[in-house]
Image 1 (tube, rainbow, N blue to C red):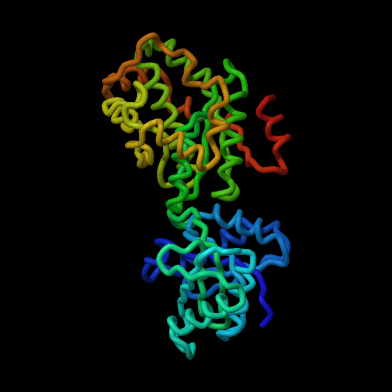
Image 2 (image 1 turned 180 degrees about the vertical axis):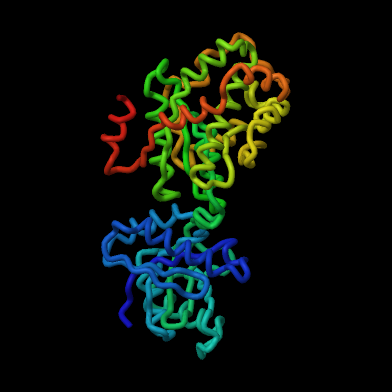
Length: 398
């Protein structure tokens, strides 16, 4: 067999699944195909415990995109060699030819136990060939390069790279949730942590329109567009909250204004979730980070929901959240200035120990059911993506 390039995608916790493992593998394969849909000539083959990707060209792009797919634990560029020790050794020599004076070792895994050589015998033969042809020194404990030789059913894979993927579970295996997305650091990270657990996310962003400009909507759009690399296609629902915020203030919310707004957002998000057949809500709350995120206030906010409210970042501090935002690529957008709806009508003092009863009295002065329906009826629905970027931002501005 002539050597050819490929990329091995290996599972993490997905491999621990039992009878329903096939469902997770099917979804992962579908997500990988979607992530690579516009890369020419990609072929996906399924093997026991891994996926094999080959392409006529652009293997670097295949690797880059595959590393962003949740459910993939390891991304391993490799070459395919014939199923003999000589061809495996020749492939190893080719891969190491540029590794001048670096130490190496060989690790062998035989997925096909019918192969006539043991792992140790094959490793010795491959290593001896490398030493004979390239003169590289062997270091079994702390090598500069590890050559991985994997004996599969039809061929042998040889590689010198092992790159981390996103891990977690394939998106679409964990149900559906609505993420309350702000323009800040927290909620995009919360969304990422949620979709990495296999949850398909819909996004809702509340603007202060008509009393604020479109800057926060721009940021929410950019966040969803950026998260597409992990998630695939996603919808953003833009809800203009400004008039409802004014109504709460006119009803005498006072120091309860922020918590009352959060309860209204939760009610809207839950109504949206019902329409979308979603199973939960997701927020970027971090315990104690701001006044609305004290335990009493979180309990008061949760009282407005009947669906579970998931808070993936509850125990994270701001430093950890910002570090994760930088890692996943949302930090630069989060750092941009905007007119956040929560800053609209902020009272001089914000209550930190509210009770559901206090908010029920306030909300009784409004027709919440019609307010929620009206807000959702005026929502804009966008699908952030490269092809519609300009048109969508024009719709936001108008």
